[in-house]
Amino acid sequence: MAYVWIFLGFLGWLYAHPYHPTLVFPAWVYYLLATVVFGSAVGLYTAIERVVAPAGESATDVARIAKREAGLATPFSGLDPRRGLGDRLDLFLLRMLRLDRKLEEMHMLLGRPDKPTPLQLLHYKEVAGAAAGALLALASHSIPATALAAAGGFFIPDFFIKNRVKQRQQEIMRQFPAFVDLAALTIEAGLDYMTAIERILKNAKKKTELEVELGKVVSEISLGYSRRDALSHLALRTGLQEIRSFVGLIVQSDELGTSLVDLLRNYAGDMRFRRLNRAEKLAAQASTKMLFPLIFFIFPPVFILLMSPMIKSFFKGGLGF
Image (cartoon, rainbow, N blue to C red):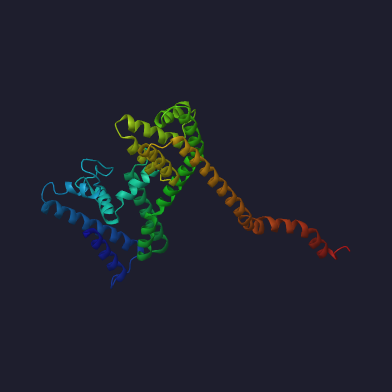
């Protein structure tokens, strides 16, 4: 919190005193002065904190930020405020904006790829914020506008991440109805649902996003997770209501002993019906969406082609009839 007050204090000083009483400097001099003064203040604060703070006290900061369950490490556990200003900035943003849970959720919905990690997602946001602030500072030389641009740029990567998550969810949903039908047929042949999933994955020629997620379910069960927990993790990783309903059907079948084949067949039929309704809705919206390109991109060239001979004849001395 001390960093925030130091930074806001110097921004206010520069905004209220844009020039020296007797000397006038270019705008970039004041930005350079702000950077130097802010860096010196942060360095002084860091040095005082290292001298005053008891040894080992900062090591508990990481646990307070990303604590989930006792004994579980988090993607931010490697941050150490004693290592440098970069880790201190990361920890400060995680504390102030409470980004740790949000970044972990984004990473989970992306399928937990090796890259980007949650920490790298935070770094992308920091770079975007700094770049947006720097560009507006060069363009406008306005400190309040620069601060707002930096704040807005910090959240720009969220739009790209959410777009990737949406594309991944759409790919999963394209494959999911066929998987439910295959699962129903395989279970009807006499296999239990986990063996049916393993058989479907074994015969798959190309690993789609859905099959990768189902492979993680099989791997978790082989590592000792219960079937219910592994399926619940599948629903969390995809973030789709259809997957949650599918998991609920399987859990209900296990607990009540009902026929899973009948449940899956009814569910597959319901999914096909909803997919048909969604297709009809998109088809009904197509005519409305075509109005804009028709009016602005198709009709004008057609009118120009039809009217150009008549306009040419008119300027030459008549319309020819």
